[in-house]
Length: 421
Image (cartoon, rainbow, N blue to C red; front, side, top):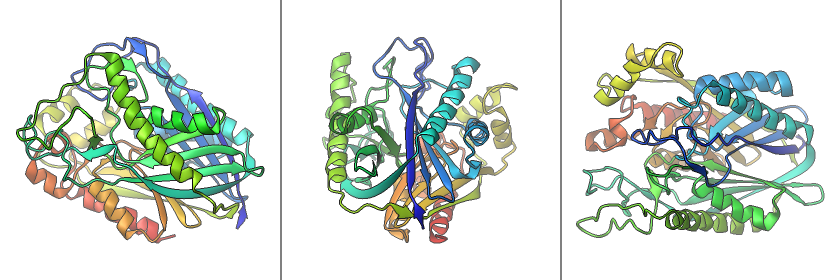
């Protein structure tokens, strides 16, 4: 075991107003304002022998090509091995669409991420870390069999599976000053709705503000989104327990939309705060065990026509062109899973929008006591539904390019990786 050192930093990655936002294919209008800034945040841990960096961006996703290029730059500038870097996104649906934002922003994004990691490395301190678990229900399963838009189509379902787990980590320096906190929960950041044209972190931003208000704005508060592929916010104006279900109406008034975003964020932030303040057991001596594994996932033969058209329309030189060409050839998606262990705690990174059932299965099967799970880590392969969801239909199976057994294969590979520790 070695003495733990930690460094944290952040950089603003807010795009200019006027860029196209992401998360809703029908929303093609340019953004009109900024509700709150977007950040790239970095946590670097060192056990005297190995160094690990976690990068979290307030974006919808990070493609494999972008992530790999940034990792190479980090290795050159901060001397951290690429396999020891995990990059992920909070999955906000009110951030820039990286496929349309333009090369100048992409280049600045990469530079800001590398800069944040370098700054974290330059401010390493002897540290200690403690973890705890809470529980909240800001999210709800969204595959309601009686959805007003069609069976299993994006409408909250109180009886459906959900993971209320809130994992938190508290990082302190030798004087017990809080340097940073990490919050992990599974729920889609879509509280503002498809008509929103303002840039925002969505509810995770309000959750982290709760912690910044308590511990001070100089801390780095980070949010890791879990497997929320079929989990949406539990909106107060969604009433799926009523039969027949009413149509969903996002408030036209901006302040009313923000009020709901703030409410859900503060529920999560309050639960995270309670868990963080309950921590009394800290570790300052530990070994960082870092593992990764390549995984091949089968591409479905019956790719939905709407997705097929989009893939075919991608031109040479556009983002993900090569990835889409491999899909057209029905080649397996080659992606990766990654995990880092700190004593009785692990952080697991999965590459897509994974259904919550798989997260529950991983937690049940994990040999490690405390497990943080990040979806969209190091890659973005789209939805990873359960096999049963393909039979049921609904939104997610209609937009995934993966075969129905892909989720089972990914989950088993993740469990196997955790068992190697």
